[in-house]
Image (cartoon, rainbow, N blue to C red; front, side):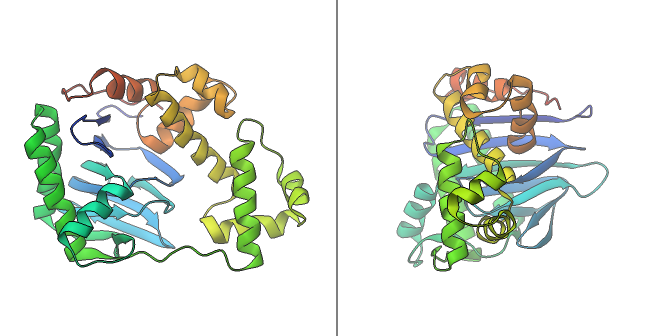
Length: 286
């Protein structure tokens, strides 16, 4: 990572089900990954480019990058000076609760467009982060609800239900389940295909169509997700790395930072040591 890059990824105890991020990146590149939560990223300066839905999306100052749960995407700077942003990651349950109370949306709520130009909501997101830093629970909770409600009213819709209909989709779902079960010692593509009664290229094609990435990329993403849960539970990064199948902690560090944006040690310290806020920042390392 270049000098001047910094990031903080944390939780505030009074905002359950919500992750928080404040960052400035210049040469940082996020590899293709997904989140279990929604991504609401408010760009303060610069431009972020992220691949989403088959094409590159550009979010500049005053815009929001919006990603629904389990949606593959990337991230990188769109200008030489990089981008500075704040983000909130509310869980699907949090968003559904707000939608049920404040909108007429039915079914599973989500965002229709991945980029929305709305400086007012950008400021709301940054105010949520400031309130969390200051330990102002009333303000943080109120501002988050106002921001999510506004985004759903401006850019909300009902997400389609993922239905496993085709034979390829069923094979992909079975492959995903097997990889989750064998995360620490996954089979080769050939072995996995044989276990499912298909060919390697047929499996690769079906998996890409179902989940937007090949099995090995999905597995790395799933491992990092599981490591986050282990770190939240107090497991050391070294132990977590071995538990999910990374060869060692440096291997984990590299992939974790490329997906989450901060090293696992910094991530764990923020979330375990400072549950009620505090303005500590870590420089990221590649």
